[in-house]
Length: 229
Image: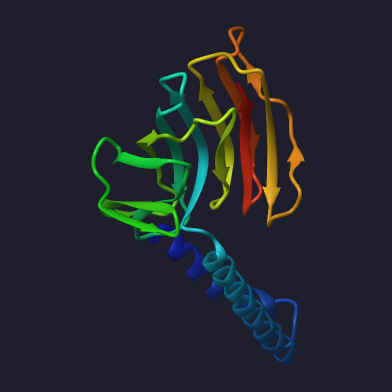
């Protein structure tokens, strides 16, 4: 908050009692000021509660692209590009979580360099990028994540999955295949419930590129771009 804005608010607060005395007697003025103070305290507490419930980041856009390099599905490269906005001041790091796929994950890079921290637990990998300064609230920044997948797409039916762990405005999933697919679909699962089919993915004329866009994915859901080849 700027100094000019603070001074303007102080001026308004000081002027309220004088304004009220033009229309109310002393008792009504005092009672009104007390009520206004109580409402201001309640409003401030509601603001603090809402602020503390906000995630550190809002993801504006995510593009997750998987390119499979051989017809056996043994080698693939996953690239994730995202733009995000900070919801709080003083943020110093960002974690990519839920990196999981059949096979193995290697050669993980964040913005072209090795992660500052990496945790492997229960079959999933988490990697961290630490910023060289504290970020301001409302600051936007792009990030990209790349890694190699080995023996991850060897079955007749395969998929790539997006886990909606953070609030996001738009997520795009892209699969680039080494051979044409027979069929494809996009579906969502939530808390182990039965899957629900969504709008069918777009397919290139050679049936080797699949793309789906999800607007405002629901938190906690898993979106599956699946294909048969």
